[in-house]
Every structure is written in C-alpha cells, then in structure tokens.
Image (tube, rainbow, N blue to C red; front, side, top):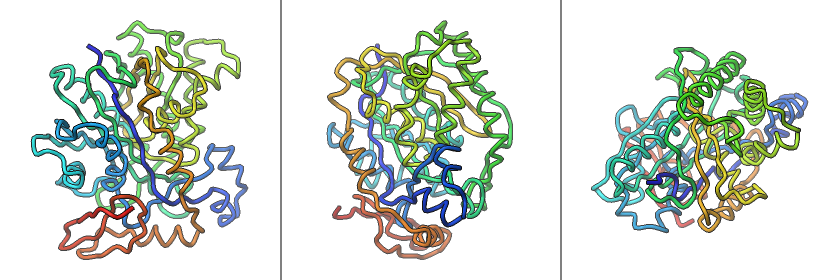
Length: 389
C-alpha cells in the first residue's frame, strides 16, 4: 500500500522586509545577505498573525477539495507554540470547524517536528488506511534585534493531507535518523525569541546529516545515485548548498555544477524570499521544487533531510506520483508571495514590538490580510476570527 502526501499547500504572512532595506539600516553590505547567506527577503507576521492563523490559511484550500469531516487527526508541528498546555492544533480545529471525531496533537522538537509529524501520520495510515490526517508545520522565526539571527527571520505554514494512494508523493518506508544532546539553538520558556550559536549549529547540522545518511543507507540499501532531487531543512538558503556539498563529498560523487544545481536549486527559491519558517522550511523547499522544477518529476525519487537543533535529524525519501501536477496549487503560492507588502525598517519594528501576547487583555488592530486572524486576548484566552478577505 502506498502512503504519502495527497495534497500540499503553504501560506506565509502578507508583509516582508527586504534584506536590502535591512542592510541599509544596519550600514552593512547587502551582499553579506544576498550572497553570504543567500537571502533576499523575510516574511514578517503582523501582531494579529500567529501560527494558528497561518496554519488555517495554509489548510483551508486543502479542505475545500475534500470532505473535511473525514479528517481523523491533526498533527500540528511548531516551536512557536501559543499555549503551554492547550495545543495550537485545537485552536485550528475550532477555527476550521473540523469534526469532533478527530484527534489533535502538538509536536515539538525545533525544526524537526514537521518531519516527525509526517512520519507519524504515514505510520497511522499504514495501520489504518481509513485515516485521513492533516499534518501542519507552522512557525514564526523571531530573534532579538541587532543579533546575528535577525537577518534570518521569516514565517510560514505548510499543510499536508496524508492518505493511502497519495496523488503527489509516496513516502517510502525506511529512514535514517540521529540524535545528540547539544545546545546550538534554544528558547527558554520565559523568552519569546530564540537564542542560537550559529557557527556551532552549522557544524552540528552537517555532522547530523552525515550520521543520518549513514543510517539511511544501512536501513534502506539506497545510494546517492538512486535519488534525483534533494530537499534540505533551510534556516537560510546557503545552508542547503553547504549540506549538499557535504553529502556529495561524503559519498564521493562526481557532479558537474549544472548537475549539482539541478539537484537542489529549485527547492531553494521560495525560502530565499520567505525566510526561515523552522519546522515548515523543509516542506516549503519541497513545494518550491514542485512549483519551480522545469522537469517532469513523475517517478522521480526525492530525498528529505530534516534537522532540528538540540538535536534530532532524519533522512528519508519519496517517489513522485503520476499526474501530480493536476493537484498542485502553484498559482496560489506565487500569488501570495507576489502580493506581500514591503515594510520599511520602522514599520517592521512596529510589528515586532507590538506582538506582545503576554498581556492579560489586548485587542489587535486589523493588519492581517488573510482569511483568519488572531483578534485578541481576553482574560489570557486567545480568540480568533474569520475575516472578509
């Protein structure tokens, strides 16, 4: 039985900060960002946008194509949780009006959680083919002002429907994984922004890739040459290039620059202009490959490398299905990205500092242009609303 991704759609915020604007404000050569880390823009969430409203925007187009009452579980991956007890997925469940006969669970381990939720969903469907599972990976990457991480912010949510006989990609059984207790990126409970040791995190990421790859080959018997396209977790676009160079060197592959680029570049295009979306970024990369590849991907094997700081990593693969092009939502992805409104640096700061969800009571002004938004907090209870957009 084939199990995998039947539908996939992503959403991002309605605003962005250009790295050219950012560089001018900081009096830094813009090429440090456009070439050094491979980023051009970062999506910025307004105060009335959080992972729940982003997730709803990502999931709604999927639900319009199926009987939403058949969703049997929502697996919500995020490290931008909105409550220490209640899962973000239950807020989403209510906002989308899903059936009460549905389980909801929140997954957390840094940027790895999305892959963990996807693997859990495929296992659940293999155990019971009647299951139709909505997997969400959604995050808002936020760092302190004037830190090295500030230029690598962004946000996004990816919604995936996991079923038997999937129309887009079958996720193949067997994967390689690796865990090590390290402190390269973390966010203590009292903080709303993450802390990161950037150079150390890059080193741990690449080391985890080598270990996960070794385990993957031991578990599956597949080789580098069995894979046509490579999708990596992308905290910043240059990281995917570093990762692929590391893997190519490890396996001793001989690639021309054109072959190297063909295997990875189409999956990097959206991340370059959306920025980091933590648990969602690997799947934003996959969508970027689907939307931007000039080749017919039918029958091609795609690899996924997920890395979550702290750290947990996993390497797995999937096979593209015949006719996958018929269910892609490419036009909507491009429309969302193209219609984002640029922010001045001061406007970005205004959004940044007004996103204070520690208040007992607050009503957020309408800035979110999407179909759902965080309207406010009353007695520490978040409440959301549908908009007319």
